[in-house]
Image (cartoon, rainbow, N blue to C red; front, side, top):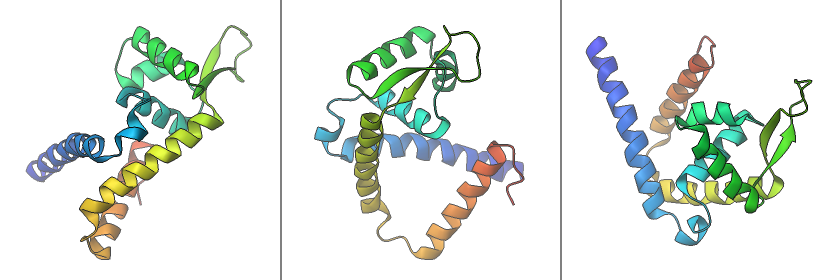
Length: 150
């Protein structure tokens, strides 16, 4: 079991890496010319998690807060994110970063480009394999979020 789990983890990591490289090679360069991969990752995090603190984003992206500050500054200049007051904090100096409508539209366009790139690779995959893929990744997502995965 441990050997198979190690193999599964190694394959998962390799698919994440190779898949990311493939997508960025394949998608229309016009879509990516105004946003870096790191900025796209930040938009993805904000889409999934919602408004977040810079320190939380730095932790998730495994980078120093200064890297997040630079990314946020560039995304603010592009109108893709904005600062918002923290609803759970009485300290008005505490701010969160939130994706804007323009940011959501940009993320949607990037998602469509990613879908089209991956579709080329997956076109010959049968529905049964796709169902298995969805089932496994849904179970993993639930377990990572603290659920039972069942």
